[in-house]
View (cartoon, rainbow, N blue to C red):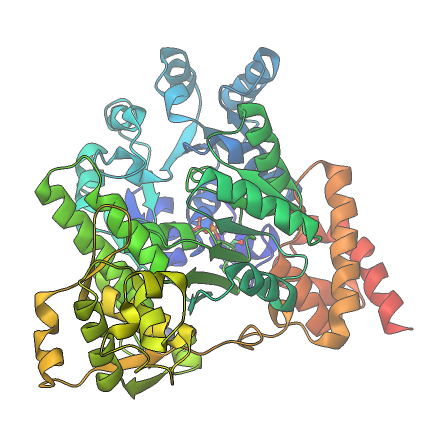
Length: 599
Ligand code: ADP
Ligand code: ZN
């Protein structure tokens, strides 16, 4: 039996275990059960792949992510691991061959969909084979309360009855207590050792900006920071998805739309390109979800506000599964708050439901408006404590200014009041700024005592004030869809002048903030080498019929740039290059590096 460390270094090409990987692997190698809760990108796969290899026999990995199986298996094969998969996409012949290989012990790992596993035929096959491990990935799918419930997952408790001797490991990134208890109960993991890590995704940089020509903001972000990278842009409506994708394509990006209104075929095609190529931007509604866990998504941008922190965390969580630096950027404005409030008010649910949804939305607005570390707030919401500010969110990197807005807020509130609480922010701002529009004249708003008293502030500054007042619940928005503003109980004290109010000074960002100016921390001068390495990777990926990240992760290419290896030994020193990959691809990459070295 090879030791886990030997397998880690020679097969996977990594130097050392991360966090609790070693403990988990040892637990399984000793034949015990385990429950592993680790954030996305934390390195769950090795926790079952290495024990499966170390224990000999066949390790079975149960996963609902059918779309990913082929790539996962190709990735293992490129490492020299004997892997296969069984799901409904396989033709009979291939399935038959795979089954035979399991029976005769010619495979180390087999991925399987839950519905396939519970068939009698499969159970029979496994009974005849030497199965040495069951890994139940995405184990939160047993939870009937979660987003991803799969009825077939409930039947997985039969593993406990039919294969009592085979160790089981359940893995998920969903960390809440209730889900964890459900997993233990439903999968019969009462005696499993639990390995629980927090929720944090430290490699994701959270940024939230006030909307101000959002398309241009997005464009600047993409041009300044994300050239050639894969990412997701989320929009609320199908139409906006189509328009935005078209517009980005016109700007020279490889942008493709994805929403439930498109034909299944086209959707499939766009998703496949996203997975296969390394510089596709998918513009999508939230229908773009499970099954697209591409590891090297470098950014997730929201052009509309998600309706809860849960949704925000899940959607932004699709960035950086490979653990590399990634960005989650959200643009939001007053109209987003108004739109979401109206959606909930106008929804069919009862009062209690609406109150609950409103509360969830308010925590989302809260995250947008805070002036302290965003990650601390996010993690606290999910029951995780981060002691120090993270240093990797916009508020940490560029602490926002606040200003005493008491006087301006009084002006704003009394303008709302004096115009009869019948108008939206646009009209009230026109009143404050003393605009001479037809609508102002029509309603005699130029006669109001507040007409023109706020001319010193720009329209954008006023919009920022109104947005923050609505987000804080000092102003309510009507339910009929006109965006009419009304005073709330809470604003009395401010109107009386009893309470001071400090607001965030929105930075009018001229260029996209120079948070991380260069793509992926690569020096300007190294970009040609970076591009050449990526080009070589692309050629090899095409040759092997796999996505580029299966050849090497971005992190591995990046390390090549830093270390500039010139021979095999130096290559082996790079994380992600094991024996097999060295043999297969080493020379091809050395060639590229030498070309640059001797120029
Ligand atoms: P998860 O399934 O938890 O989302 P993965 O298993 O896909 O995460 O791992 C995320 C990334 O981290 C992968 O690129 C993987 O190769 C890498 N990784 C995992 N463990 C290690 C390690 N010990 N050293 C270096 N890289 C690792
Ligand atoms: Zn922070």
